[in-house]
Length: 320
Length: 278
Picture 1 (cartoon, one colour):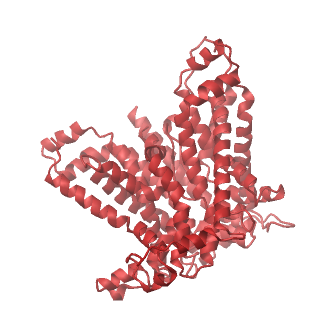
Picture 2 (spheres, one colour):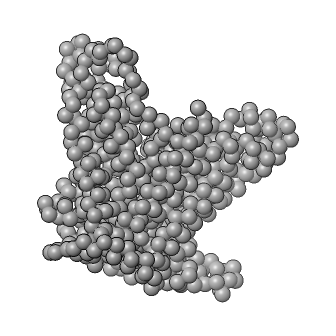
Picture 3 (cartoon, rainbow over the protein chains, first blue to last red):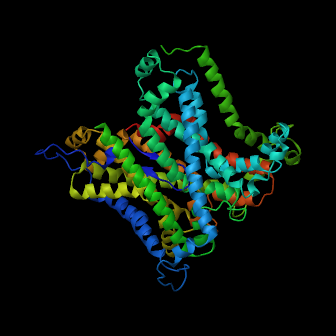
C-alpha cells in the first residue's frame, strides 16, 4: 500500500514510483476462468473523476483568460488578468508570502521532524507513546489548531506573559497585527501541526537502516555526526525527497490557518495565493481574476508535484 | 552493542521534556475551556480554573439558528459518513475491474486516476462551484457528499487497486466454481478480505472531509447547512476574547477525531506514512 497525503484543506497525493508501471501481465495464453465483476462497475467512478478533476480544471484554466463575474456576459481578455496579478503589489506580496510559507515550513518541519525521529528511533522505552503524542496534532483540524495559537499570540496571551516573566518585555508584541511578525506566527502554527507528519515519514525511513551497519560504523570509530552523515543520510534519502516535496506542495496551499489567525491582514501582510483565490473569486465575485490566481498557484504546485514524481522515480531507477 | 544506558535514559527524559513543552497548547486549551467567564481574562492563562466550570460547553452546545454547533456536528457526520460510503462502494468496484481485467481501457482508466491524484484541485474550484450552483447542489449535504466522492475517488481507487493486485484470484475462482455470480463473489468474498484497504480509505477520507474548511466554506457558504469547521469559524468570529467558549467549540471539534485516533493510531500513522517505504 503506497500513498501519502498531506493535511491541508485541499490535498495532494504522491504516487509511488511503482504505481506507474502497468499492471502485472497475466500469464500469457491462460484465459481467466471467470469474468471479474462487470465492466460498468468502473463507470460511475470514471465519470466523476473526469468531471471533478479534468473538466473542472480545464474549465477553470479557460476562465483564467476571461473577465467573467459569475453572472451575465463575459469576454475573452487574453493575458490581462495575469498582467494585473504581476503589477499589483498586493498580489505580488501574496505570491511572495505563498513561497515564503512553503519553503520556511518545509525547512522547519523537516529539521524538527528528523530530530524527533532520530531521538526516538531506537531504544527509547516509550517511543510508541511519544510517536502517538507527537503525531496527534496532525490529525486535528488546522482551523481548530489555529484558534489555540491565536490565543497564545494574543497581546494579553501566554506568549507575551512568558516574555514578561523572563524579563523580555521589550519583545512583547501584538503578534497577529504586526506586519513583520504576523506571518511568522502563521508559520509557527503550521510547523507545530506538521512536524509530527515529517517525523513519521523519517521514522519509516530510519526503520530501513540496518542496526548492524550502524554498529559496524560505530565500531570503526565513526562518531554521531559521522554515522549520521555516512550511514543514515544515504539510507533515508528517499524519505527526505518525499518529505520535502510533499511539504512544499502542502505549504503552498496553506489557507485555514491564515483565515483563522489574521484573515490576510494586517494590510495584506499575510495574504497568500490561496486566500486571494478565495477572496477574489468567492467574496468579490471576480471568477475570471480568481481563476487566473488559481492558475498561477496550480502551475507552481504542479511544477513541484512533477519534480516530486521525477525525484521519487529517479530514486527507484537508481535502486534497480 | 547499542544498549539502554544512562545516556539513553537522559535522552529519553529530554525527549519527554521537549514533547510536553510542545504539547502545552493542549493544556492551555483544556484549562481555558473549563474556566467560568469572569476568570478567562483575569487569571493567568496557565493557571487552572478555581473550580471546573462546564458553562462554556453548555452554552456552545445549546446554540441555535444557522450556526448551531449541534446541527453542524450532525451535518459533518452525515457528510463524512456519506462520503466514506460512496468512496468505499464506488472506489472498490472500479478498482476491482481496473485491477483484475487487463484491457487497454482499464490501463487507460488507471492512468487517468493516477494523473488526477497529482492534479491540484484549486483551478477546478470555481467551475465546480458554478456547476453545482446551477443544478442546486450547493448549500446541501448531498452536493457536498458528491463533491467529496469526486475529489477523493482517485485516492480510493488507487488504494484499492494496489490491494487487489496483491490478492490472488483463487478466492473468486473458488466462489464462482461454488456457484456465485461475479457480484456475489465480489461483495461476499473479495470485499470482506479488503478490510485493511477499506479501513485506510475510511480513515484518510474521513479525516480530510471532517477537518475540511475551504470546500465547506465555498460550497455551503451562507446556507442553512453548515459543517462543524464553518460553524466554528462563524461562531468564533462573533465572539471577542470569550476564549472559554471558543475553546469549548475547538475541543468539541477535536474530540471525535482524537477518539478515533486513540483507538486506531497505528492505522492512522500507517495510512499516512506506511506506503512511503516503497
